[in-house]
Image (cartoon, rainbow, N blue to C red; front, side):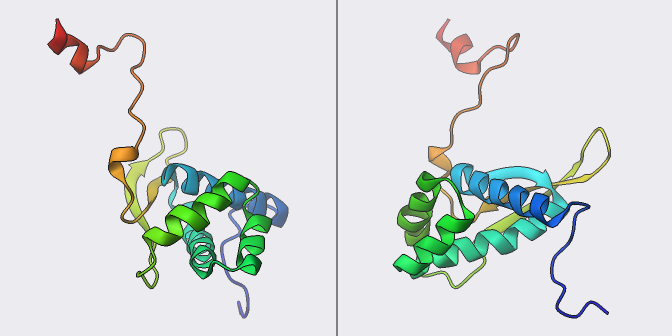
Length: 141
């Protein structure tokens, strides 16, 4: 029986799993949209929602708890100042998961996890790779 055993081990030690989720939640808060495997995304949703709830709480104790998990001070500040204000009236469900297919190498299920109601206009534009032609440059000529 699995009493009091929550979460998925993902084939990692507890320290590796903890470090991985710290990095994933930091990336999610920075970019507000990341691509990872479906199993990691489902577990990340639990952690990310807890961090945003701490941000909505806004107390010094909550900030210290978030800073103990998210090691980037800039991202802790963003969670408390920007993201928490965005979800002030929402009671939960701050993330959304899209299934996007399978990874080419090992056929792992891939998913995109993103923050709901994120500002799409603030996204960085896609870099043009070598050999590609940018659409705007063709229109100018």
